[in-house]
Structures are given as C-alpha cells and as structure tokens.
Length: 252
Image (cartoon, rainbow, N blue to C red; front, side, top):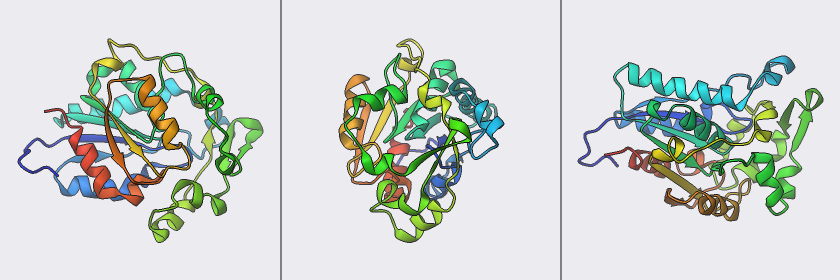
C-alpha cells in the first residue's frame, strides 16, 4: 500500500504472449484507485494478419514500450515504472536498453528476464520438458505466428485464479507473432543495468515454472525479488498483491 508515500507514479504494463493489455485490467483498476496513472497497451501486430505479424520485431516492440514511457513523462507523470509479464519481459529489457532515461524502474512479472545474447527460444532449450504447455501451442500462417488451444489453456495459465475471470480471459486470447522469441536479448550494465529492477516470482506457475524463474533471477543478479503464491496469471489470482509489488518498485 502507499501508506505515507505521496509520490504518484506512472505504470506502463506490457502483456505476455497471446494476451492483450486487457489482462491487466484488475491491477490497473487498483493502481488507478490509489492515484497512479496506468497504461496497458496491446502490442502492435497481436492477432493481426500474417503480414502484420511477420513485420513484428522485438526492437519494434521495445520502442513501442519506451515511447509509452516517454509519453507519460511528457505529460508530467513520473516516476515511470515499466513492467512486463511473461514474454513481456523481453520487451521490457529491450525498451530499457534502448532508452533507460524513458523509465525509472523495471519490473518482471513471472517474466523472461534473460541475460545478453540469449533468446526465449534458446532459454526454452535449457528448460526441462513442459508437455502440458507445449500441447496447447500451434503454429499458424506458415509458422509466422502461434495460437493457443483456449479450451485447454486454463490449467496451464491460470489454475488457481477465479474461474469466471479465467473463462472470460481465455475467450480473448489471440495469435502471437513468432519472431521475437528467437531474437537474442541485448542488455548492457550501463543502460538496462542502470535501472532499479524487481522480479515478481510466482510459485504456482505452470507456464514458466518457478525453477525457471529462479534460474533467470540467478543469471541476471541484482533484482529485488517479490514472491507471490500465484499461477501464471497473477493479475487475476492476486491482483492486490501484484499491485502492491508494482507500487513497491516505485523509486524513492
């Protein structure tokens, strides 16, 4: 909670694969109720045509996120916290490396926080098998994108979240551009590493298991770690606690 803190902040929240900015609605409502400014955009190309999704790059997504941070600062909002969920972590890292002056802190929510030179695809090769997750993913548009078997996704994405919220969310999943997961992350100590960093680990996650999250935390030391007893959808399972973690990331 804010408590005695009078500092109001701006939050840019970047969703994960197959989702849109709407997934953050419960958390955004809480943060706005506490006086903060929240922007939760849907990344360009999500659910688009084959041509639109083929044009997506991680660099483009990073610039998109950085620009939303700049826009808040231009409006006099700040400090600005950039947070990403799941694959959104790749976008956060890319934005922070691209323009660290655009934001004041970064947060990874059970997200891909990878060291320099590693891609999401590369990290997955180092993980143990996750057959339940792999079984719900299919390629479309000749491999340009992937889609999720929404009828069977809830036990993987949100097994302890409120069933009504999960059912509604599963109907909104959309095609995900495939290329960004194969792009190697570029981060340096002087740019990305200059920002205060928080990692919100979720112990019941079946998509990016806690073991994988903790490996990433160990590979990129320096993050403040917050632990939630939540599945891969903490914005549904523990929205108050996630809002608290985001608020705690505001630099003093």
